[in-house]
Amino acid sequence: MNQYINLNGHYLDAGEPVLNSDNRGFRYGDALYESMHANGTTIQFYQDHMERLIKNMNYMKMDIPPAIKNHHIQKEIVKLLNKNKHLKGAEARLTVFRNAGEKYTATNNACSYLIETEKLDTDTYALNTKGLIVDVFQNLKKPITPLSNLKTTNALFYILAGNFKKEHNLDDCLLINQNDEVIEAPGSNIFLVRKNVVKTPPLQSGCMNGILRKYILEFSRHLGYETSHQEPVTFENLIDADEMILTNTIDGIQWVGGIRRKRYFKNTAKKLLNLLNEKTRID
Image (cartoon, rainbow, N blue to C red; front, top):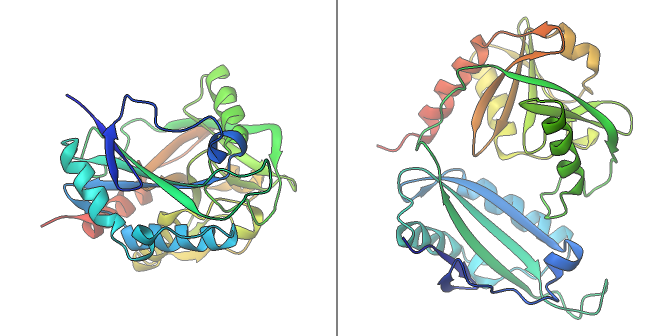
């Protein structure tokens, strides 16, 4: 079955090359992206994704394409989902990149956009049956800068973490910042449950500002938990926790089974997953 992409409103064969060698996203990582979960023709958390993208584009001084500014992009994503027959659960990725310019200095701030879709195994979120085994990636520390919270195409730090995970036969790994604070996993926010408190690293520690992050805090309060999102997370917090949970909009909620000799439960993860599926349910 032929698959298609959308480049600036034009639907093209996904197998054909469409970007020039001087593409700034390719050359310099001068690009941002959003990975969205789609169920049928519904894009979950669409408004949150667009608000984050536009905020980050403004920070990067990128001109916002009219299709994104006027939200026509939502119809374009849905059309591509239909065209690719990805209607039973899919990932829709929207990438924006600054158009060609002189080396590090862009000629102007005009941007292009690219939409891709990929079929997922399920249309709803499901909890992993076996707890993830993780460890801390300490070979490189993530610096704390205004760029730390942005989703850019410059992913070398996460690629090195992925290599570490593979070399050590782990399901995932945890990242630390320049202050040795635990901040996230590659592509996921981290939450710890200790007695009646759900804790996640503050954005000031340099973690990604994940779309699900605020909802997990909201769900936790709804379930009667206290929440903590202003205090840094230490390795000692990992060992003291009863549960560890990883979240992102594609996988939803995953529970961690252990780190080194420490083992975790999944009671809160199951409760949070039920609320997540309630929020994203399509009638």
